[in-house]
Length: 254
Image (tube, rainbow, N blue to C red):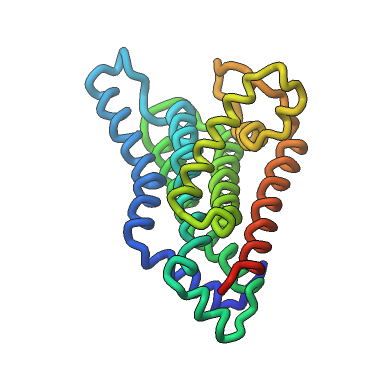
């Protein structure tokens, strides 16, 4: 994917040493699932008639839906941090002055971001599935669990890479996170604008949301997107962001 193993390892180390970033990421992923099961479990114990069982297929669906958004935000945070850390600290200037390839410096951030986000997300998904199986509730469908888990992992990876690519273009981590979070909300609002017609197929959230199976009784999606189209659209947005990041890294002054 780019960058030497040593450079990739350095990127992973830099991210993991940011304790506040890792704490927030753990809280949004693992913490979010644990808190959900804790709250729904206590509610069920207090009033089992009014509050359904916390586990089973319904519990897993709620946990995966929560992760889809919270873990996605963690992806934005990690990606934006990886994309701006070297420039903010002056490490980028030092690395370029020693003759290191700018392309390799940026490329190493891609597996670095994935090496942090993917294991963390998989851990949160394992807790979500484990809770659904161990806590009282209806039978969990292995197919649905796999589909929902794949959708959560996809949105985390996509958000992380989008933020990584846009970070060098914008230059400020907080601004990158805020703009992307706002853009996602705007995209979902535009999905409701029927006047846009099939242009809505190009919206990033139309593709991302299509990957997450609809819950029983949910409203139909505002934009009917096929899985293939969804994957193409999402991949296109990610590639565009990464190309922009590569270009800015190559052309910026050291």
